[in-house]
Length: 187
Image (cartoon, rainbow, N blue to C red; front, top):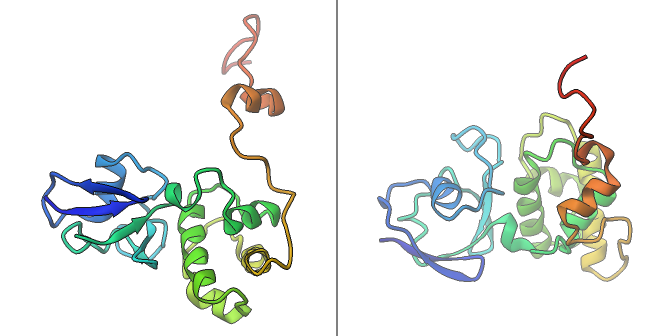
């Protein structure tokens, strides 16, 4: 039974050692922030930190992850206060959100090594594919997160963490429950 530390908690999987880490995280550990995109290591949706390095979890087995420290998007910051998460929101560098966890993980790994990356360094360190095309805003978001990391700037534009579903429904009419007299899904 391969064991590792995931988001600062020791975990032992009762799975075949050849199981991709991605499937163990999503299916066995219920850490669904790590997304299944292509399964071939091309898109980066499944990016996690393995001993601080951004790796595609579809390409590493739980046997290869044995004894290592894994950080998923859920472990990056439970309250969404990590500078990368805050900057992605503030710079509107999020569209559908599917690729966002992998991008945030890759950006966090980059900023851990280099808090003042150039555009070229960002593009090289974050090879993730985004169908929505957030790339121009992504560069500015990562540079902004770097400024926050270096204590040169703060971000107040990102939403406060911890909003519950009922409060969100009040702020976003599309999430509010339908009235009992309105038809559902028809004209």
